[in-house]
Image 1 (spheres, rainbow, N blue to C red):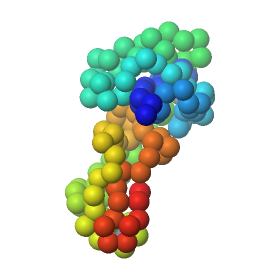
Image 2 (image 1 turned 120 degrees about the vertical axis):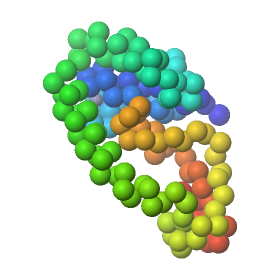
Image 3 (image 1 turned 45 degrees about the vertical axis):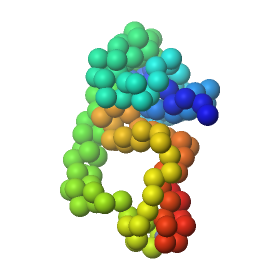
Length: 138
Ligand SMILES: [Zn+2]
Ligand SMILES: [Zn+2]
């Protein structure tokens, strides 16, 4: 299985985790992102590494657009504020199909998705849960 690595948007410095050797476009500004050598699970919680990726691939890049970056950070902050109350009520994962809580994790990939704080994982990475009740996967 391919590793999940960091991709950096050269225009707005957004970080995303995705499988290596993919064509990835920025979630926000749709610019093709630059694949880095940094493994997502090694660095998603390491602020210094994330910062150095932004410096190396975005801030020093001629495509980098500071105004756009600020706008997007602001937008992300609002989105994160909006999802907080909902996520507090859903500590127990539930089946989206039948609502059962009798589910199991499939993937071992560390899917610490937190919108915008350190980048998004793309939907292509795979399904993480299976419902024991109705066999739905998501
Ligand atoms: Zn971008
Ligand atoms: Zn179900």
